[in-house]
Image 1 (cartoon, rainbow, N blue to C red):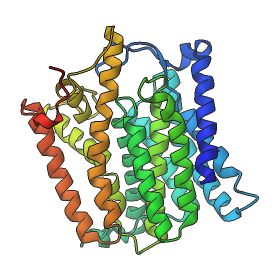
Image 2 (cartoon, rainbow, N blue to C red; image 1 turned 180 degrees about the vertical axis):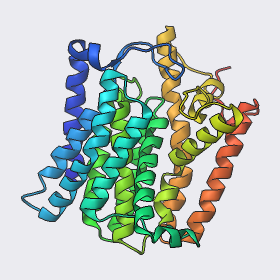
Image 3 (cartoon, rainbow, N blue to C red; image 1 turned 60 degrees about the vertical axis):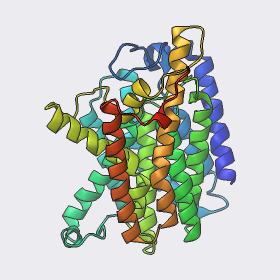
Length: 364
């Protein structure tokens, strides 16, 4: 538990410093785009929340060297591997000029480094026929890097409201830590704890007021951290089903896949063109109708904060069965299909103005 405490306080204090002195760096680090199609804040906010999270992770894990060299070595290699994707995301937060393609490429580089350093290549996914193809080393390497980058990008995709991506990541890391404890994989468990603490330190300031944003650096970092720990957990412990991490992260993954389908086949536009039609955005527009405040900015902030719990609940619908059936790939596959159907039903119900009444927060 010391990993949680150390990472929390490092992240918490660094966020405090960044917020307190934002007037010194807001010109470079502030998100001043208040009119963008995916923007729902009303004032300039620092978007470098990934920095405190990274230093929270590093501070809590590197001090393990004197007491536990195994954990220290494992964590150091993982932190080194995370640098390309984190730094590229951070560069986007500061310059606003790094394209998604470049961030994805950097994340694939991070995945390749981690897999090489920690011998973590995905060679089977418990699907008949596909596993034969993944037995080919080159295909396995490409597939592993693609999966890690995809998961990391998915956490950036859902980072639209206060506490959304970061809280979902925390829920997933708690589940990963639980299963790591069950199989006695302590290096992974401690890395999960460090991630939980670092994100919690950030969340204190991010939710509900949105005093600092996760940014691309933070979103790619926590996505990569979760993806790599998930991969390493199933490779180091064959008893854990390959479908456990898939169901665990199914909400951000399916959001990404559905977005690609929606943009490419329904709207006939490039998947890389941003829009305001993600599930969390239509929930914000059509389900969250109530807030109390004295100004437009205050009302908007409250509605922003109310949106995230809907998606926390949705994510939990995948996380809970994943934890219950972490070693049963048949049950995990069934729940993955059930979650996909639930997501599609919910999305189309809201889009067609048939939002379930129990979802609507409305002051009469």
